[in-house]
Length: 403
Image 1 (tube, rainbow, N blue to C red):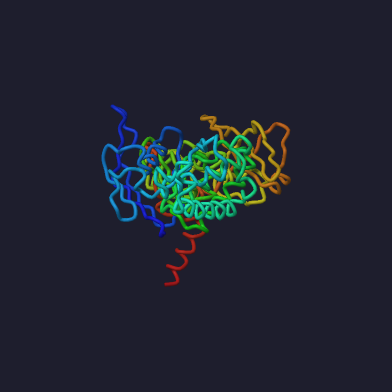
Image 2 (cartoon, rainbow, N blue to C red):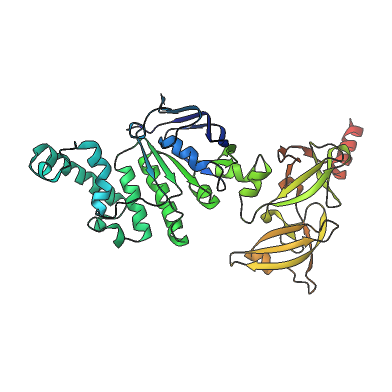
């Protein structure tokens, strides 16, 4: 069956006086893997439950596969859902757990009863087909040897595979996952991320994956939907959301360690003053306007870093250093009136070449073109253009004389 596209139109949800979803509009393409990413309480799980039909929206329309399903019951929406808790039947074998949705949909009430099911030729034939479907899915998920076990005899990763198998055996048009990896340990979570992406690519099922873990979203999704306080803050590819955040809340949420936010204000001629230094850019800012400058830790340079310094330099004091093997995190305080904290991420090579002064005092800098500018409300501000250097001005003057 072809995967379903989804249109979410002005969906709102209230619980009493509490407005959980505040007008969600979103289009998901057929076969796309989309992650709903946001902190706890932002409304992402509520939106997923509305898609599944487990909650009724207060307002708005939900279109799945070109059909308005706003009032359609869950069983008629042709979707499958994987829960955080796995929700396996403890008294059934793995085979029976995977087969459960097929048994319920293909066999009548009488055919599901033991005695009638044993003597009915039709029921026997249907059960043979169901068993073939179960074995095929088990082979895809590499759990062929577990079909006769019960959930209590399985590891966390094996239970997760069984829950996924139970969902995909029905060939749904839409696959919903509500933080399905959160109960697994770190190593198994990384392994399951890759397996889920590979499985979704192979099956081509439209998938919506809810998570608060940015690593899951960045490594798995075709597109990320960042949600905050019941609203969609930004939609885009993982790299677009990381490199081009539209709001300071998105910038803070995406990236580990979090983006550095430095206080600044508008100076004359659209220039920007940050911690007592003027940056080599022009920004859409008025003189005296308070703004924030976001700079990723990997774009912060420290004294003898092999990357040449560009722009102003600040004196800073090293507070602590975290060596992680492939990289090093340096936590500093800029030595100015604001005493602003800043984090730098260095590669192992850059760390090995870094001077280590006895007093912990170093020089830090960053290229202003790597920075993100946000106004007092948190909205992104654009650059006018990079400030012309004196060399550029001189070259223009020479060119004017030659004319």
